[in-house]
Length: 396
Image (cartoon, rainbow, N blue to C red; front, side, top):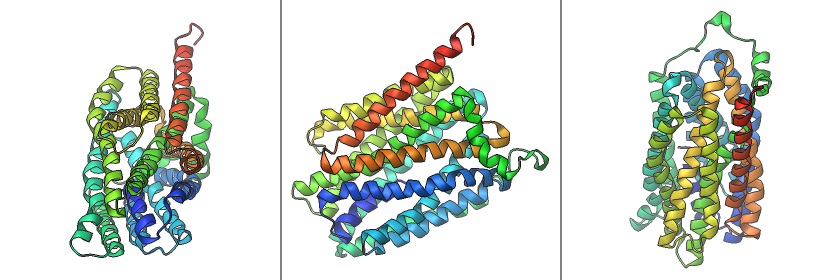
């Protein structure tokens, strides 16, 4: 549900607002920038609130806010309105991602944490593949049925919003209430707000924060710039916006399908390895996947598929590796707060990478954002090697 915003946005920029393609990278980067400003401000308080009142009310309300944002998105008449609606979407993203990340830490036994995270990643990938394939092609199908282009965009977003409401109801009914610790064990709210950063004294938690900086940036770059790259390439080849969005969505789907198939394999490897080792290898996979895109000429060429497969493998590896390490290290009494700090680090990464990447997408090359992420993944991989060697040193 979170990832559809990029696919829908590519359609709205072209069909609803008529934005020239040479400006869309900058606008998309700016929209993500404002999204991450909101998330940076709210991840910490949201994590602390979940540690006080439980995961369920926050998680469920996040999907209702996403539903509101998707309802508003297609009625925007200019980029300023679209930015406001994107910031509403950001509030929902904070609640949903905080809820999911914290629940994934709460539930698994340590010996099978990698497997459960991999199952979650698999199901997330399955949802991305199936839902975005369905909804990414829905405007084109509706246009072929006689709907106007703008009308097709509105009804597509309305369907997505309705599904968000159904998910919120399911969470409210089915998710376990309360918190994992007794009332008397709960930390004061102000201490919870600061504890996520205090725990960064643990090198493993600090490494996981660094991994979040780039791993969440990974997901944002793929979700924002892969559909946009394919859409702008398709329009340059003479396609109409609906057809170009479909082609751009397919590239995104290919990468997520590869992630879907790779997630169970990576989950088993994570449970066999030291968590820092697993994170280090994951960052290496991610670096290879992103940097391989530099070899692509036309992203819509059939042979380019192999590089989007490598990209998906790298992206899901980075996600699973970072989640497994923070899941192992986050203390029970402050899990929501530590996950909040983890997510704040990710928000800062998305903010910086997309702000710079969006401008380089327009001004230099559509490949530029992927080059940035690939290089940062290499730096985190080196940091992981350093932490692991320190743990193995005789003085450790």
